[in-house]
Length: 348
Image (cartoon, rainbow, N blue to C red):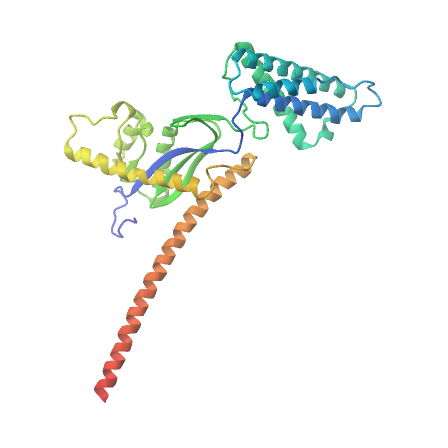
């Protein structure tokens, strides 16, 4: 809703709604053993390509236990509930194979093989496989499941696990985006494949609102995670009503008046609008599964999905205005016809 023409720019106006969600990528659930098997197969393919270049200089092709490693991987991955010692032993075997393959690749390079002959795609997968081996070896030695900047897919090494704690999906794999709803139109405020605290986006988004319109919003409707001490202090200084309660105050305080409780419920109903925007973008505009592989193309797909959603809202408004125009025109035409008929009868 636009402010009236007589609105004082020094006063706040409007409602800004904020929320964040995860946009899942099209990748299989990241199992460490499957990832190691794919990395091993990549290194074996690199050995095949490099050995063709120096076959006249090297008498024997580096040994790879391809069949044994593949059969061991299938024996574990096909089990419904493999035991932890079996998984650990399979990881150890795959790690040893990758380490030997990487050493063989170095030997072939010293013998005269050129990595440029691999092509950009295979060369990129080789670099990612090398980093996967380092991370998995580190987790194997520490007997841990965590490491910094963990790679979960060779084709999309930029994807990171995003722990959201949602029902049924505790961890999601894809980009995390921050969006805001302003008068029914959705803006993409931030996109990142690394997990971040969306509460840090509130002040920056309110400042952007001020730069675009010349005044601050009257209220900001956001989730409980946005209700931090810094955000509350900022909103108080600029006379902005930050709706909602912090995570430590999920239940209404007995000191709150009935008017304050009704105001909180009203803001909570208002904030539910942006939840519907997120559901619509995933259900109707393809943000439930991102099929692209590169960071740039994934950004374009996410941005275009929100652009199309806003464009369709404009088209709906235009259709409504057109229908209203047709109704007014038909009413005016019928009145004119009736007046002509009355005049004709009067003349007769």
